[in-house]
Length: 307
Image 1 (cartoon, rainbow, N blue to C red):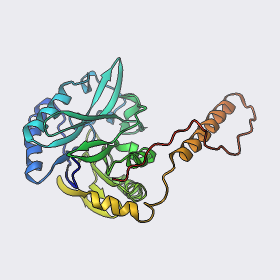
Image 2 (image 1 turned 135 degrees about the vertical axis):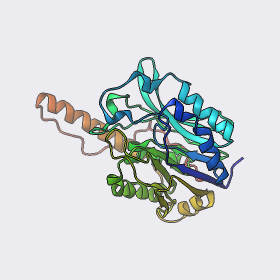
Image 3 (image 1 turned 30 degrees about the vertical axis):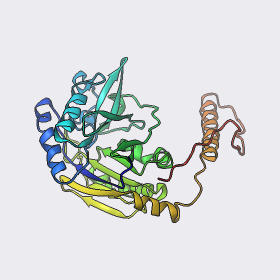
Image 4 (image 1 turned 45 degrees about the vertical axis):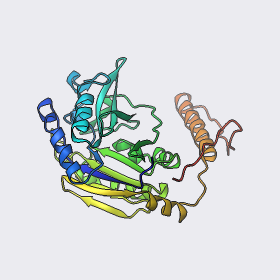
């Protein structure tokens, strides 16, 4: 059954070791008492910020349905509230940064692996886990469709747009970012909300860790791009409304056609050009790039949901 609203709590707190995990049920219960139906935690909330260094540690990762997974599920069930958390999950020798969305009964509603990994001072993520090739799909919390992206994924908004076109009413993005970079993030998040005509909701790790100046506000933008919430408070609540998304998609730019077959053809052309550039860089061969590409007959459209 579709719900017309969803109350989302942004909990800017981390629980970086097993002893701290014991505080999680009470923290979620506090958010539920605040009115939350979904609690969004920062990126890797049950880990220390290990990408502060380029040295991975065995104890930072776990198998599928490992101890962090179980701690999040049990806390959601104990508090009676949905929660979005995550863990570094190792499967078949490959580690991924995985977002985990649990329902109020502790059931796993969705899992999503991070696609875009920074690799720079304080954020040596490519040394800790592999980039995924995950096409996120909308997940439903109390009948309200959400799309999940993880931190740097938000700076490549194509998948967020696809999530909105596939029916997501909100893009939810846990982060681990520096306070000093917040103005750039804010610009991207507002633009994504306005052009995807979907809410964008995000929360970050709240304080410096291992010499990395993490921090910045919790944030929510409406489907028209308006800033609804921007705060350094550890717990904040925003209510998402289906009707606001419908209004935005009936106005400009929301009513403009969404054309997946055209975009797919454009990206196919870009991929060919990138491959040719890479080959030319290897052998110094001059290669003429194609001037244009048209949508292939084999490119399939998919239905665009606006509700």
